[in-house]
Every structure is written in structure tokens, then in C-alpha cells.
Length: 75
Image 1 (cartoon, helix red, strand yellow):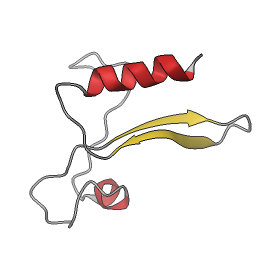
Image 2 (image 1 turned 30 degrees about the vertical axis):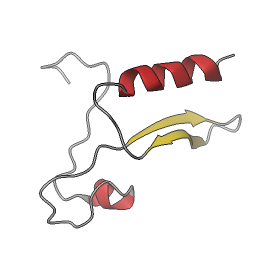
Image 3 (image 1 turned 90 degrees about the vertical axis):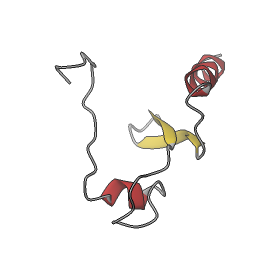
């Protein structure tokens, strides 16, 4: 977090527990995981819920896709 200056912590999933749970990794010994993205928000009761899921992320266009979703969901 300090090195890159992100205002949030980054997840390290060396044992692939999260990757397996969310479908990004097929096996614990897989060499790499797929790029998957979730937009998580909160319902009126304060419970987290998935607002959007992107199971196949394109590095070139994903940021714009998420920003467009966020802009349209605020309307």
C-alpha cells in the first residue's frame, strides 16, 4: 500500500483460497489465475452485496467498463 500509494490494501492470495472461492483459480497449484472483477456495494441494512461481476476482464477496456457501470448506477 505504501509503495504504490493506493488508498486501500491489496490482497495477496498465495494459497489461492480466494481465487478458488471466486472462480479465478481452477486448482490450488495453478500457475496463474484468471482476471475477474467484482463491484461490491452495501444494501440499506449495511450488508455487502455484489453489484456487478466481470468474469472475463480485458485489461484494455475494463476500467472504462467499470466507470461506466458506476456512473449509470448512480442515476
